[in-house]
Image (cartoon, rainbow, N blue to C red; front, side, top):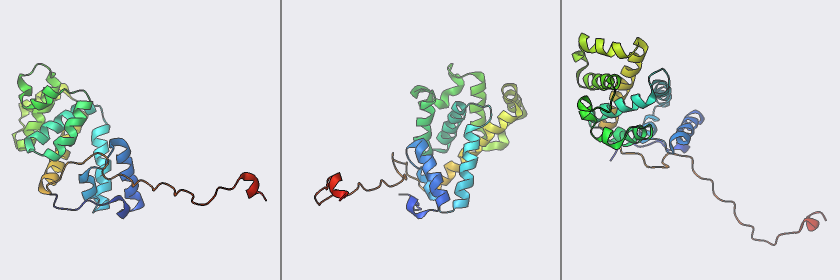
Length: 202
């Protein structure tokens, strides 16, 4: 059971509700992590902006970012993040065998050298950032620009943060439809006789 309650949409400000609705429109739910973080709206809103920038801007493909997010979450053994981001990675084109055996990336032939360098970076930084050697960085630099390395490290760093946040709070995976706007009640049926248009004009 999660250790902190999820904030309901009807309990948040107009600004936070708008963020909830935007996320719901994109994903079909509002992730439990977001609803927990909404206990502090300023943190939630800035996290959303940073999250969007890390995942959706720059020149590193989102597909690759999702792959290293999955590997980071595998190393940290975070079922909450794996539940959602494995699905996202699959939708972006990675197959089940690649994702299920991602720890074997170094010996696989279906990852490019650039993808392998990114996966190696995710493993090194997640396990011990001090272990990133000059030789490994030089290999990384042969595939990516300085700005792209910033993108990769931000994705890895962001999900090490998310992994620890969710593991500490024992966050439960989000179900489809959770956190969305409440459906308005259907209009009540008329109980009296219906007047004709001519009658209403008299």
